[in-house]
Image (cartoon, rainbow, N blue to C red; front, top):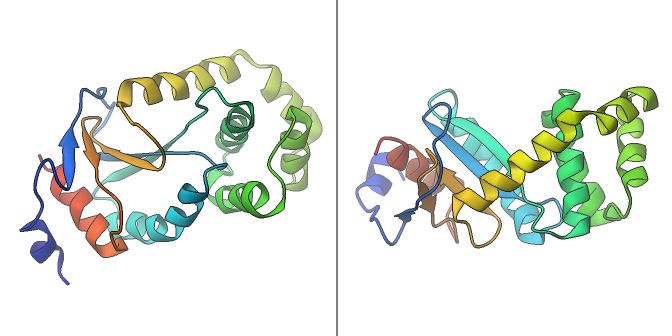
Length: 185
């Protein structure tokens, strides 16, 4: 089905809702709020990956890991921070999901460090990143974005910082069309 056919049926209050949100630095952007510890997020990844490809350069795609005050989730936030710090997010994103969902969730900071050592990052570089002030600021930034977004759970998609999408039961094609439609509002 074409994106134009989907777009004709998109309705505020049903397919998306306007939320208080927060201003994005650039638009159009779709921001995924997720946790590596969330099985729904893990399953959603198979739908979302093709969406990102379909969006191409039309809409920027960003991720915000959610900690929700849960220690295991906060360790997953830390893993995402390290992936970003070492610029290995795209190649390690699926591996982190697999580690947490299929093998064993991170239980300690040392587990996160071992994971990245296994990805070829030097232990000294990991230690430096873990001890940096940037770590605290970045993790606080994730929490602030989550708090300001108005999400009630994960996975959630927020477009341009103010439109929360209803993503349940949508195909990749329909979800991409919805993102493109809402990004133009």
